[in-house]
Image (cartoon, rainbow, N blue to C red; front, top):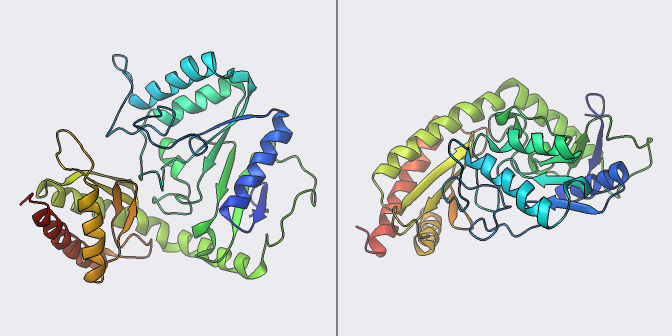
Length: 315
């Protein structure tokens, strides 16, 4: 990776973020950092969280994309009343939020955020630890919006489960001499070998597979959604997909009981789904899965959703 782009190899996502924090300190010699991960991640209370198109909370101007609305809020409210924009060192954001609910921002968000960062000389840092390395059908999730960040952090899928992370930056940011920064287990040779094999497989087949099977899965889930009153929202890109369960599609009141039952009933029928906030990550989202495995998993998933809805009196 160092032969391709300025980067620092670490042992995990957290150490990759530690590196980017040090980079912005050296680059700016400033103390402030605004982050969708550092601030509360509940978008119902905190407008500075990644914009949630399913649950917008700010008033949009006529013709304004909701992502642009959130960026305008950052400038007009946070910069004007809390901390001046020219004192912000970096903005750290997940292109698609993971543990916060698999939130996919509106298309106008990242172009507007990049413009805001350029205006105030702020580093834009993409946290690709969960959504990067082909998960969304592109190398980096932020590519879906045609925006180039200043720093990218990566881990998890970068070595297919072995401990490895990376902090990648523009050459103008990565100004440290070799050997200035290090960490105890960074650059483990076995993990690096696994990463090289992962990159090769992604290039040869799995990047395209994630895009193709991901769209297939989203289309299938949207068909299932029509038949189930509890499925309020299906969202995602590539094979990073979430389903949000609600008690009523009109009020969008979260249905945590149904979400929990889907997880439990799925476990009892050998179907593994992951609970995150008020959503579920559907099964068969590994980037090497194909349509056959997806069909089998979604058939079981619809059955357990039906069981959960009957338990809650929605059928």
